[in-house]
Amino acid sequence: MQNAATDPLPLAQALIRCPSVTPADAGAMAVLETALRPLGFTCHRLKFGEIENLFARRGTAGPHFCFAGHTDVVPPGAREGWQDDPFSGAVRDGLLHGRGACDMKGGIAAFVAGLADWIAAHGSRPGSVSLLITGDEEGPARDGTVRVLEWMAANGHIPDVALVGEPTSRAALGDIVKVGRRGSMTAWITLLGTQGHSAYPQRADNPIHRLVRVLHRLIATPLDAGSRFFEASTLQVTGFDVGNAANNVIPAEARAMINIRFNDLHTSATLTEHLHAALRAEEARYEMRVECSGESFLTRPGPFVEALRRAVLRATGTETTLDTGGGTSDARFIARYCPVAELGAVGATMHKANECVPVEELRALAGLYRTVLEEVFA
Image (cartoon, rainbow, N blue to C red; front, side):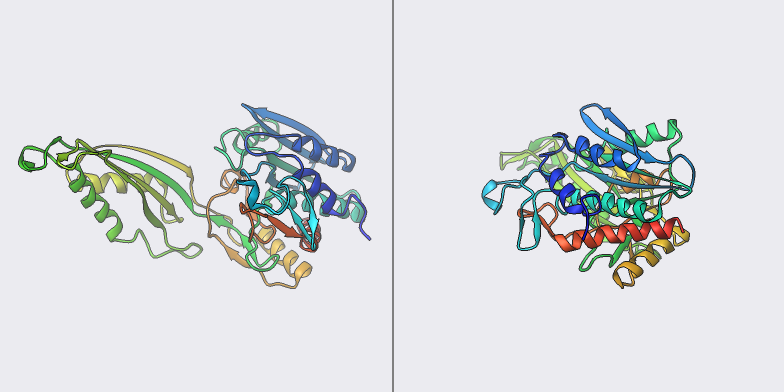
């Protein structure tokens, strides 16, 4: 029989009942702090801009293991899409329902429960454990993990390794450990031409035609065929607009939006130059703005990754697969400071209406996190 401290369900319900849609905290950090203090954690509430964050640490010595996650959630959408109130934390048919049950309040609760179980079983051990919890993962990600990491660096709290509790499992708990992510960048291109009458194209310079040729140049040849640990990079045209309501006017501008997901064969700088080269090849007059939300990163197989492999095998009987697919996560920021991996629940319902997680899977995840701590601190 699990007690309140080692059963993740009560804490997961309490967190779900905080309607913490980015950027609101709605009491989520206070709920978490209340759970951590009795376990011996020193808690630091860190507010940057309008974002509430929490850094909590137990112990001061090394090795230092950090668990990272977020209490903010995406909006629930239309109420009629839900069988229960999205913030009720209802349990029905063995499933915990609510926004954040899967992504990732359930994961945070599972880690705290597994941690409490590990502390009860092993008592004081050399080393320290911390939690980096942000309220800005689902939002712009400017005043969350990035700012907390800067504070941690300034105050001597950078960990030796970190684990992000995102719902990374695909079909069964622990079947995927993410050891890297592709980078992501977006480019907004405005190609400049000369406006004119469509009956007299020789008196104008049609930017649409030139932009079409640029885009064809960019998509005709793949960026790469993949690398040892990553799938192929992708370039997708995600927007095209000329803002022209007249059928007989050649417009003065044409705009495109491009998103690139890239592996470790590239950087945002080399890909930006790739875009410039395609535009120069068409002798385009243009303006371009580029934003990179994260470079690619990889935690190569080594002691930390092997500890995670052993933990998954012990706790679930599964030989896990190392993976670098999917979108971005806050692990991209942590990778600048220390080795980081991601391991969490099955992500089948994240961001969906009727988001839920099986209660027994949540408890199994708590057991998996306890085993991770045992392997890391072995």
